Amino acid sequence: MKKLIRIFSYAWPYKGRMAIMLGCMLSATLISLIPVAISADFINVLAPGEVASVSKLPQHLGGAYLDRIIATGDTWLMIEVLIAVMVAVALLRTGLSLLQAWLFGKVGA
Image (cartoon, rainbow, N blue to C red; front, side):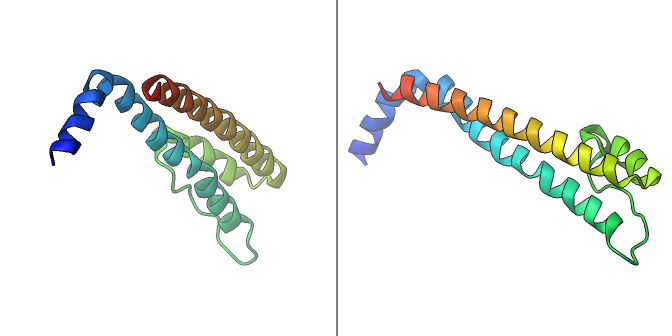
């Protein structure tokens, strides 16, 4: 137990950076789920015999926008939105991962 306390005493001055690193990891993980949710919505709409539904995303995360796209039934628009969201999520996740790696390097040094 004494060794663990000693290790935490070394890390204590960097608690802010470590909190940001943890936030980056959690944010990147949660952001990775957005394309899955959108894909599920569009697959439900495009599946044969299915009735057009509404998006399961919350309104503040773009659910209202997806509801309007689903209502149009425009397949190409759905594909374009899905691709745009996947690219945006990949860029955002990469940025968060780079920030996390940079902070990890600063704390580790």
